[in-house]
Length: 424
Image (cartoon, rainbow, N blue to C red):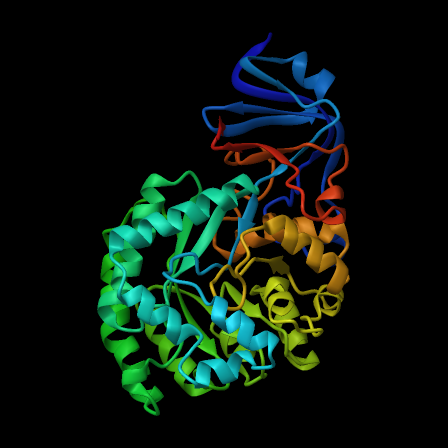
């Protein structure tokens, strides 16, 4: 008996499933991309209904729409699990300042950096912010990103942080990518609270977070059962461990999941704090110490590294991804798209950087950018791999070997993007 499906992609030189059997990947599992030669995928009503070798699939299934992927690669859509895609303005002048020798934290201390973008974002309407971010998401989609996390954090006052949440919801309703929201009111101390970081964290905990939680309950994200997280920038010059704990626990008490920016420049103890609070992820990890990496490896928290930041800031020091993987950390990759430290839209570029500077194998990088990244935003059960029952978020790459994603530079190998079973 032949079963009818919506779409069949067949005859792929490589079908790379990144299958994980319901869990994140660690250690040797990260080296297994679930490769099937001459592979095929069957899609029905937006979901994957069968995966296997082409002759076996075509003997059982037919479809009105068929895609011949001969000499090409089928792989999961990328999951970008850490972005700041909603913002106004740019920081090109700071790019020149850094070339001339200024550091990221020096620029922030002088009122630039996050605070520069804060003012531009405050001054820009919800409608204009939505248009700007929508264009960014379209670019990311063309480069293969089919699911993305987006943070607030460029408002730093209640009204603008809530405006950013409304923008993120508007994007979720108009853009093809799946979006998961994160509240990052504690991204930096705004000028009106200069030298009063503790008072500002009180504002975040007692005013911003309750209003954000109330917004979420009525939002499209709650209806879609997407997680809503609270995040904090635990860093010298931003928020210390006690202030970060106050914010994270306030969000957790409101039912929010936890994420945290930690160890980007200095290790303050934020990693252990976040792991102790059962965070979904801890992100950056450039300055993480061996003892804390071992704590992370023994937890369910996912470590997210973002090499575009180091690359863009001209640093020769990158997070020790190789050591983390060897220790057993469930590692993910992300762009950290933002106008200051990582104006990067491309997950393929992240893969290339991670292989070169962080000694990740191509298979490890791909798993870290798909299935592990999906778990880092609470979507591991529905996206991030090509497995029966999952959402059909699939890329067709114009190459016979998936490793060319990491090997080649400056060319977009993503030929076709399929989101929820539909060709975008």
